[in-house]
Length: 100
Image 1: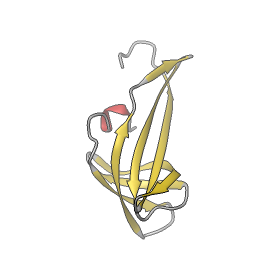
Image 2: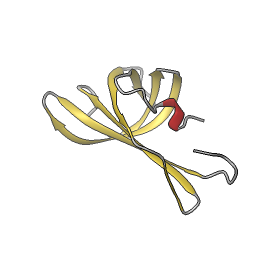
Image 3: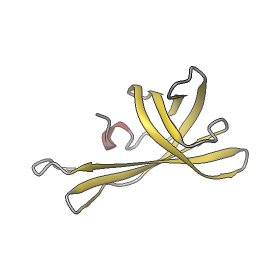
Image 4: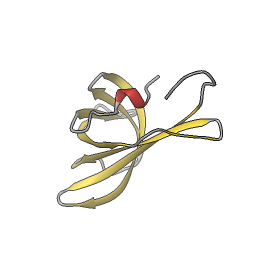
C-alpha cells in the first residue's frame, strides 16, 4: 500500500499516469505533499501535481519515483500557466501503535 513516505520530500518527481482501462499515458509532476493529519482515528495527506495532459478526474496507475503502477484517484482542481493543477487525497485508518 502506498503512503505518505512514497511522496514526502519528493517534490519535482515526474510520474507516468495511465487511466484505468486505457493504454494512453500522461506525464505529471509532484508539486507538493502535505504534512500528515491525524484526527479521529484516521491519517490523511494531500498530494498536488501539475500536468498538461490530465483533464478528467479518475483513477490513474502511477509509475515513477518508487511506484510501479499504483492506483491513485486524481482530481483536476485548477488550470493556468499552460498546465492543470491536480490533487489526490489519501485517508487511512490510523494504526494505534505506529508513529507518523
